[in-house]
Amino acid sequence: MALKEDWADLWIKSMLAAGGTFRMQLTLGCVLIFLTSVSCSGLAPRSLKLEYCVSFWAKKITCYWNPLLDMGPETTYRLHITEEAGRCQMDFGHTRSCAATQGGSACSVPVENLFAFYKINLTAESRGIQVSAPEMCIHGMSIVKLSAPEVSIAEANKSRCFYLEWNIPGDEVLSVLETEYEIQFRDVAETSWMQVNLTLSENAPGFANICHVAPFTNYSVRVRAKYLHEVSFAISGGRPPWSDWSGERFVRTLPEVPSTGPALWRKLGHSDGYGNRVVVLMWKPLTPKEANGEILGYSLHSQKRGEPAMLQCFTPNLQCSLLLPAREEFTFFVVATNMVGMSPPTKLVVPPSGGQEALLSPLPILVSPAGDHSLLLRWPLPSNPVTVYIFEWGQLPAKEGRDISWHYQPASVGHALITEAIKPGKLYELKVFTLVDGKIWASGSTSAYSKQIAPLRAPTLYPVRVWKSRVELQWEILPLEERGGVIRNYTVFYKKEGDNEHTAVVLDSSVHGYLIEGLAPSSAVTVFITVANDGGSTDGPVLTIHTKDSDYGETEILSSVLCVGFLFILLAGSLACLWKHQLLRKYLWPPIPDPAKSNLATWAPQKCVW
Ligand SMILES: *[C@@H]1O[C@H](CO)[C@@H](O)[C@H](O)[C@H]1NC(C)=O
Ligand SMILES: *[C@@H]1O[C@H](CO)[C@@H](O)[C@H](O)[C@H]1NC(C)=O
Ligand SMILES: *[C@@H]1O[C@H](CO)[C@@H](O)[C@H](O)[C@H]1NC(C)=O
Ligand SMILES: *[C@@H]1O[C@H](CO)[C@@H](O)[C@H](O)[C@H]1NC(C)=O
Image 1 (cartoon, rainbow, N blue to C red):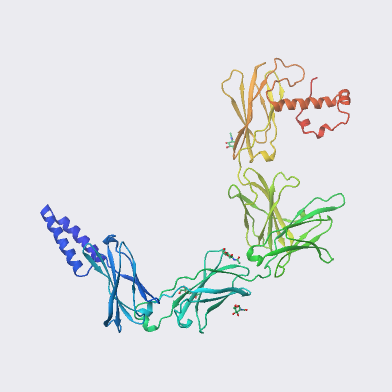
Image 2: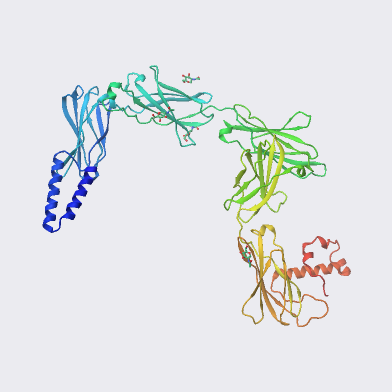
């Protein structure tokens, strides 16, 4: 390589030195002569080298090399192999050869006997230029590549172990003592292999007991072999290569009892008229690494203070619903059962209803969005010996029967990422509980959006009072579900008759009314409202309101409104007034509903002119 760079350097320098065409031709000629003499004397533009050779019991030797790129694709490679007497002191047999073309990088030559040294030569030839690799002298037995082993037995007959047996086909080794093995295995659910290196100490079929593996796990196993050559061969240069890997075999290890109990939590109902309440006990399935076998079912026991535990449920499901006295404390235990046995129990104490929550130490939680569909919760690690965290979340407003999700997290971390049942534009209430020995010890709560989106609609806008030159507007408070985020501001747009542009007034989110002044009597004003949160803004429909021609007596609604919503409110308002009218009330609605309980009543105008 260094030599070649020197030539390039020399050549460029010569070119620079060459002033005229004649001198240039002369220089080129010199370089060509130089190159030819170099190739004749055995030096090459790139050195050709035999990478390695392997021999097979089927009596052949295969050698590999890297094709020379700068000699072009038409290069022919020729491998010559000659059996030797002694350590390549004298040719013993005929030279046999094989050839590879078109960038080939290996070829094989048949041999009579592997128990001999071989002289190996490689040449490359292209357009009359020939390059040779340095000669090698290798003992046939020092480069033996065995056939891939065949695994005959792969079975699990001992806890956390599996047993393997294999052989090398075709009598390639007289004794397994002449071989070295590598066994690789992996959990089929994972990608990386674990390896055991092995040489056997007795002459039997190849076998191994692989232990300290996980229970009830499907392992994929493979084996490869290497001929153990004698030391005298080693100094002859070659090293036996590994055989190819055997085919993969699968073995499932034996099950064991579940290593841990399922995470347990509860959902509490309100107490009924008889002092009972529904308590739903819920648990999470074990991971395969915890279950150690197929889970057949879960059993739930309940225990009152000072009484023996009672079996409440045995079920394959993940919850069990009980009706229990609300004023008593219960301790629950859940265990998971597989074909081998039962997990340790998980304990949860449910205190009597009322009063308990207030006694708990508060736990401050920080919540931040971690994507459109996830929230990151963080809380300080308590100094007490906390065993587990439970957190639960559900959409706000908290309606009866809403879906609550929960998650269990072992101690020693102060954060959790929740991704289940989280949607953008919804407000979630989040609660964290710390449990020590099944008892709630601290809790905290907060609320958050994973992502704010524009409000689903604008609030309904309506005029409450209309004068000659003024209009008083109000708008509803949007229900939480429709806000899409935290409302920041409202913008009221209005346009007087004859104006070209709307006037915009931005109002704080706490304001729900606005007075438009300076209007002409008997004129039309068009209005609409826009509501904005950090996720965007939403426009409402346009209303047209007519001012009165004169102000007399009490203020009243006499506007013509092109909004169905307003007409509806007006109607509702009128109905509320009718209620007050004793005579009519008697004839129209003999069973009287309480107007104070109607939502519409709150929207009614303050006074009605009849
Ligand atoms: C497992 O089976 C193999 C053969 O099937 C046997 O040689 C080995 O002793 C067995 N191991 C145990 C622990 O039973
Ligand atoms: C087995 O041999 C390989 C290759 O020599 C080596 O990298 C590995 O560490 C060995 N593994 C063990 C478990 O000894
Ligand atoms: C183990 O996994 C392999 C590959 O996924 C599958 O073909 C085989 O059936 C599994 N064996 C058992 C016992 O589950
Ligand atoms: C109204 O609130 C939105 C959302 O936070 C904000 O982008 C916008 O600038 C606010 N408008 C005014 C005038 O403050």
